[in-house]
Length: 314
Ligand code: NAP
Image (cartoon, rainbow, N blue to C red; front, side):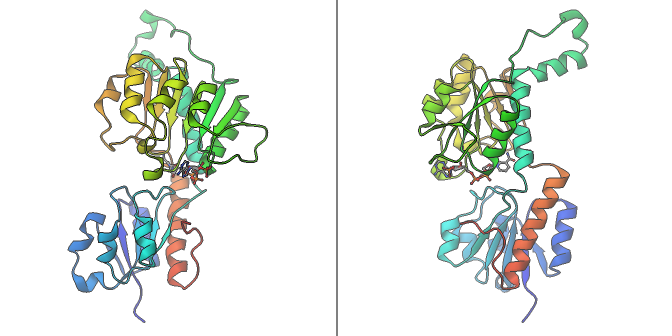
């Protein structure tokens, strides 16, 4: 049988692309939007797709690749892949869970502290030479010992909770079902979680099933001392409602790594002094991106070897 052909849809770093090409010499590169534009004879040879990005792989892209057997996503969140359409066509979808939990959880804690301690203004005051003239920062908020709510106690949510537990916080959480925890407080309702805590970190999956899960009501329930941190997907939070609440001071602040419109978030965010904004860099360390790339490649190669890939999406 001819060597399997891999289609690479990026953007990948040079190192990542080289690793894929080394493992599968018959690799082609294309943007996901351009799949249909490849010659039909080429499309017919493609058995695996190494996908990275947020453009999306839907039924049309899958139908353009009649021999496709696997879509291996680079990343744990696979909301841009139409999994139902893949299932109907017998295509396996895989992702890269667990290897990125620590980095995303670290960033959630960093965002929380950056907001509570007004670190962006602190940095600017030193950097711009305003310290001597303007003096100390106004006193800020203590994070250690506060009440922290995790919206979605999955793999990443649990790592975030563990970190805040080490900060002597009281941990509350909302999930669809109660989990085994070291005595953390469960809320079966998102609004009840928001009412109970001062800091709320969203760690839900993205996609249609959780769109606007954090509603205007939930945001308002956080209250004027509330800090909202989102490291999940922009879709999980009602973003216009969040902007309204931040502008009106109905919540204290927000730390965000994800937005509805990436990479050009709503410009209303840019005017707010009480937010800390990051460019979707949750898993963006050398070590973790390497581990994600390795796991993606293992999924592809094991599938092509006729084995069950290690991390299929269920
Ligand atoms: P996970 O283990 O699957 O946990 C996801 C959480 O979402 C679980 O608590 C789950 O609830 C909840 N959930 C799933 N479907 C739901 C529904 N229909 N309604 C309500 N809750 C639902 O996922 P993970 O590995 O922790 O990753 C979480 C998300 O983080 C990813 O999907 C991705 O979007 C995001 N992420 C972001 C970055 C970044 O760079 N910022 C990096 C990696 C991942 P139950 O507990 O009830 O099952």
